Amino acid sequence: MTDLLSHCRAQTDAVVQLLATLVELESFTAAKPEVDQLVNYLEQHLATVGTPHITRIPQTQVGDCLLVKWNADLPSTPILVLMHVDTVWQIGTLTERPLRFSEDGLMFAPGVLDMKGGLAVAIHAMKVLHERDELPARPIWFLFTSDEETGSVYAEPIIRELASQVGLVLVMEPPTSEGAIKTARKGVAQYLLTVQGRAAHAGNAPEEGINAITEMAHQIIKISRLQNLQQGVSVAVNTVKGGFASNVIADFATADIDVRTLAQYDMDQVHEALMSLYPMMPGAQLEMRLDHMRPPMERNATMQKTFNQARALAQQLGMSLYEDSVGGGSDGNITGSMGIPTLDGLGARGTGLHALHEHVVIRSLGERVAHIASILRDWKFD
Image: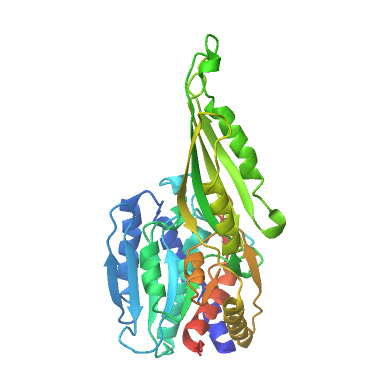
């Protein structure tokens, strides 16, 4: 096992070269042509890693997805490696903030950490296994999706279908800045509250109006009371819009609501409370709409058992592995909530997700490659 780690560390320059290529192919979620160009590259590149079976999954609203299977015909339990190719950075960002390397061994670029570093680590892990003739006798599936940064609305059915057939899911999101993998993630739900009032002249006939903004203020107070940070429940009204002129009683108002919980039970409780809101002002009308929900990835017995085996494999490599929980969601929320053993945060280490200082720590890439390779090669199912 320590030989595997040494081999992967020696491959660091090759990982960096692959990562640089991925970064240069900008892939903002809403830019389908550019995302598809990256998918084209991955399709061609991965065809040279052994003899995989590759399926392109066309999408109309977002970039295409890509499913790559090695040992597809073997009857044993598959491992699914889950990755997204899209980033939050608009096309042209790379011109403003080009790829650069610092003297202290950091690699800066938009999307380099979230999550093209994870793509490079997973791809190179498969290359290492092929080079060393150590590909295990089990199916290994790579799924590349294209709309994770906007909630995986189109990818979620694909993820659920594939995850239901596997015994382990590896999510190539970055670890925490300290290098811990993520064994718990908050669930995330997005709601839109619309208040309908009645317009009237603010000076001549204010009594004839129903001020939707005032009604919204009442609702925001009630919504804010649902928050319980000690229990891991955050409920926040983050944008509010309403009215159209200062001399007209506002006849409409809208608010975006962000809900995050560590447990599904709490998510259900908040959902019920939000859907049960009622107007405080006579004549006002409310409409609450759930736009999207990612269930929590809970640290349950399955998660603890899965982490323990991953940590044992890391120790055999001579590495330490730690765990942590985070407030942000990922596609691991989907698979974890399905009861599928899931390890999240296995990608490149660094800091600056969605920030101007986004970077990966180059010296850590070999270790991350070695750990993924060892999981793919040596994982034991009950």
